[in-house]
Length: 240
Ligand code: VGL
Ligand code: ZN
Picture (tube, rainbow, N blue to C red):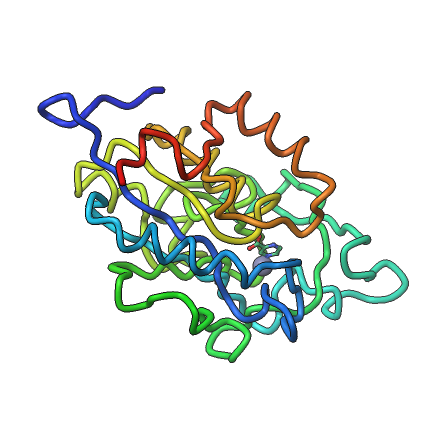
């Protein structure tokens, strides 16, 4: 709860709809999240709520040679969902810092059909589109930072098309509400990094689905420790 309230003490809320893209949705997405498409009506209800000062949608937006794609690594250590490779920090002078990177099927290649927002989402209600994960050599689950926590615009300009924290601050946002796909990856890390960037952060549980549904309880515990409030749509903070 690091953030201050709006000028009159009220909250200034923004909605962040994470990665509601074809490749994350059944029946044919390459990294389909079970029931991923089913949360679109609830997300549209939220998009229609007039209280949000801004409604942001993110898109995972990788180049074909992205480091997270299993097919870009030699066998046998290139099994999607299972193998990990070492990823280097892209920040100048920090290249010796490395992290294990989980490998995925090819997904959300920039400008491909799999990267498109699903048509069930009311795109007409979205103000801002964020393209993240554009840098071929680093993962970016969160819309705020890469996998190493880099937020410096000079480092991030290859990874993302705009600085979401700066945009939210410019619009005097105090609180962000996060929904979308996937709960155990991009939604979780976006909600956690919103706290780190100084916003109150709320994750609406019915508005997300997980790659590994069995890991959701663990993810929720991690979110709570990080200062994210996991709530339901009937929470009084979302005034209907
Ligand atoms: C995501 C895995 C790889 C997500 C993105 O949107 O949660 N998961 N890339
Ligand atoms: Zn990705």
